[in-house]
Image (cartoon, rainbow, N blue to C red; front, side, top):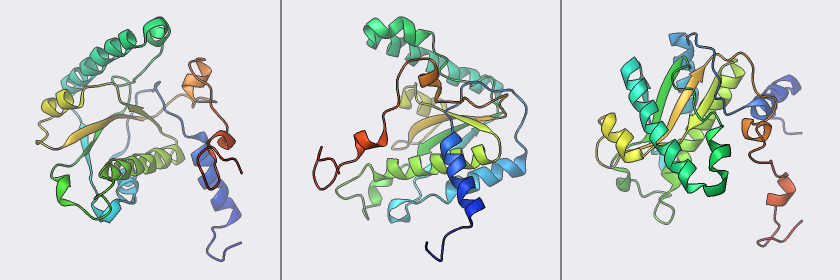
Length: 216
């Protein structure tokens, strides 16, 4: 074992947070103390980012009418998604896809504008800015789980429409609506598995060696 490893108890806590993280849709209202919210966002801000560009921006939504407008955008896309799903439309419409009105805190995670100025690590992979933001969101998610709070990532919206609603500059892009707050219970398994929408696939299906589709 590496001399730099955490203690067994600390390692178990890290793996527990990863294993018990859930994309939550059911919230219990309440509130998130300001110092706790700051701590969670601090964890997000410590995420790795290519070229240290730190492309993430978080917009805290505190106006109730703005929550409603965001939920309206999500509902529009929910209907469009259902239409695109064809024969699975009815099943999809039965799923709860957001907890915007019920969560204690609502955040919009976005990519900053003027990202084209950052070339280090992005010349051939410009999407690394998005990967960096995803790492920040994951940090926030895991920290929230460790603090006993649920978080849900909502991606059913038109980024341009949400950007206009929030006064985002040209070049910036909304990526996630994040519902955060206390929950009555965490799902025992991913909600889409519990609702029989999808099944999780094992790691071995995704693990290759030396070449595509070559199994270890």
